[in-house]
Image: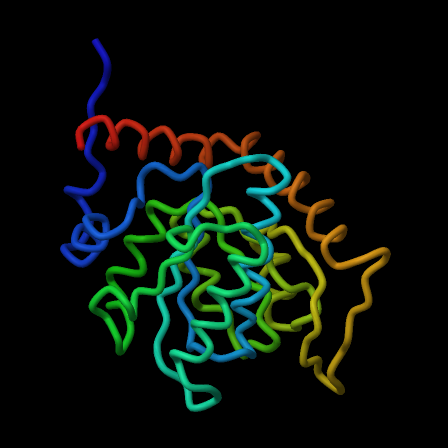
Length: 221
């Protein structure tokens, strides 16, 4: 007899509503990124890494941006730029989800974000600067594999404690901003690390178990 388990029944109503509007159970890789919709949060790097996973390994992928407005740039302009980038990198439009487009223009409820982390398996944070990585802690506490910007002091300190995987992007350091140069290209850099990250993920029993739970829940839909 095949075991049956519906993880969604234990999660918040907002997550169940979101699951009816987009597929949260089927993707091999589910990335949740809650952040202010600002270029400094580097949403574009999240899109590029997701595309590198799909391109290099052929995995199905879903990126859920739990976004909320920023004064840095008009939300619709920035979202349009990110969708255009995704298309250029061969992502489908439904591979990238903005919760602000699905009934939550002011931000997805915090309890819902925490429950989304129960479903997701990869937390990717290339942010230019962070004062304290509370969201990193929340993602880690719910069993996500962490990929963080090593050049951000707060992320490096916290990531060392949490055994995170580090990559390098431009950042605001203690004394000055840093700028990264990639050889031969940033795309090659991403693809090199994609292979390492995914290998580490599937050799992690907790990450594998999360995928199994989603698959069992999918059978009940």
